[in-house]
Amino acid sequence: MTGRLALVGGQEWSDGCTFDTDLLAASGGAEVLVLPTASAYEHPDRAVGKATAYFERLGGRVRGLMVLAHADAELPENVAAVRDARFIYIGGGSPLHLRSVLMHSPVWEAMLEAWRDGAVLAASGAGAMVLGDPMVDPRGGAFTVGLGLIEQVAVLPEASSWSHERLRRTISLTSKGVALLELDEQTAAIRDADGRWSAHGVGNATVHLDGAVTGLEALPA
Image (cartoon, rainbow, N blue to C red; front, side, top):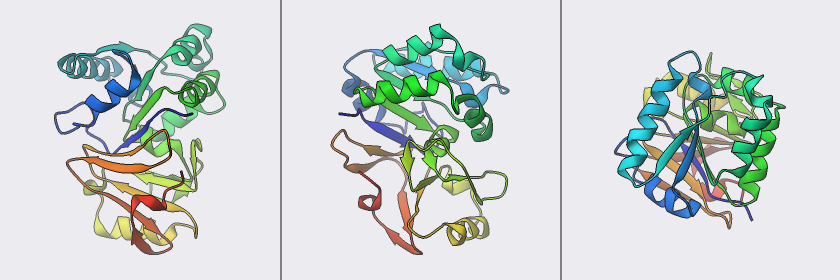
């Protein structure tokens, strides 16, 4: 049985992310393995520092794993760390860089194995974007290939920062049968181990499917 999956709309590790307490408890441990991969060119050490201070307030501890390039995603010690983790958190930043590092890598395979073995997997911003397939292309709002942890789902995080026209264009370009999950910052769509989805946090989680707005029940179990 898989672990919980949390897709976060951005502004991770901040006070509005009240769902993190439950995710930490669900992991059955106290350690959170943070991958600042998406912020590789934007001071990844600062991302780990922010996560460390945040989770300490929740009674947890953070281990930062500096998988910043594809070569890092092939190192046996990084693969082992991911496979053994019970709570993995992918931070925000550049979805295109994150995808290039993880795609077809041993670390990505280890992440899938850990999640399928019951580990909690959380991903915010860019992290949430790359887990779907197709993936919203941040360069223009059209679509490209994602990592495909959840298929036929495209994730659009930080929705409040998108203009009405850009959002409308992305919705219009979404293929039939693909669910577009629109997430506000500090908001998570969480899939439980039994496949049920629920929304948590301070904002909205909206699903667009075949031109209509629907609920999270439209997402695949």
